Image (cartoon, rainbow, N blue to C red; front, side):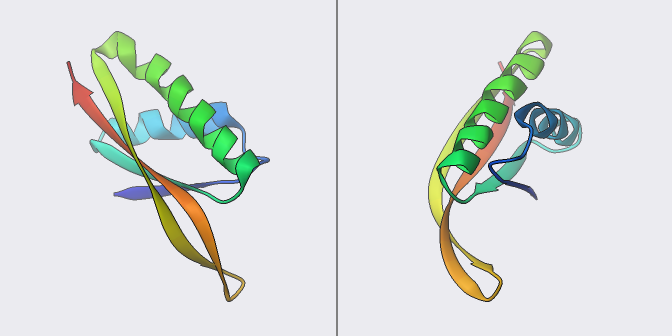
Length: 88
């Protein structure tokens, strides 16, 4: 499963496009975000990706969890979104 890392400065449409490309070859993708701004961009990206995939008959389902990440040798807690693509 591929992992996309999102920051508060990440363009949500770019992440959505990357997700759509991944869904061409895999049925799930992981998105990691640390901080409120990054989580906001990740949620917007998922909503945009759903708009890209729905006309193809593909629905997205999201599992959300906390994740401990090491950044610059510091432990940080982030949010992990596992997005599953299923044909409906």
